[in-house]
Image (tube, rainbow, N blue to C red; front, side, top):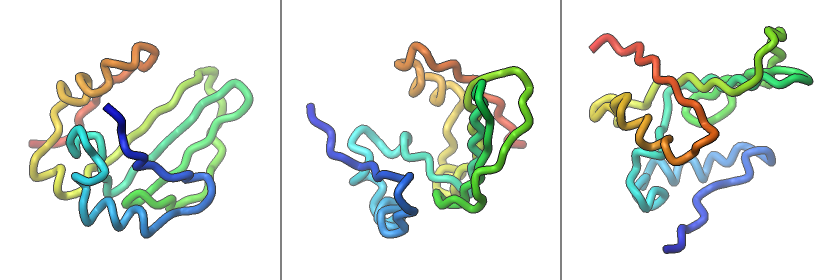
Length: 118
């Protein structure tokens, strides 16, 4: 099975047209189902490396802050926190589903800390 290219070089620029196309027709960009296109109200991505750490906030897939340095705490890794967009809030993703979707990456450790109240 071949997969269509559905990504963009995000380092080049924010491709607002691409984001709008995904929002209009998410199924076209997710041949295996739209669950892997977790569109978010906001997302905070933090990278910790030995030679420097940084964080960046996104709103609806668009960077809303520049990269910001993070104080070294002696750890390395990546943490992603997000709040799903309304369509996923109506049909919520379960912690088990997230773990199942990420299980095929054997070098990826996933911890789900669900802060939803319902």
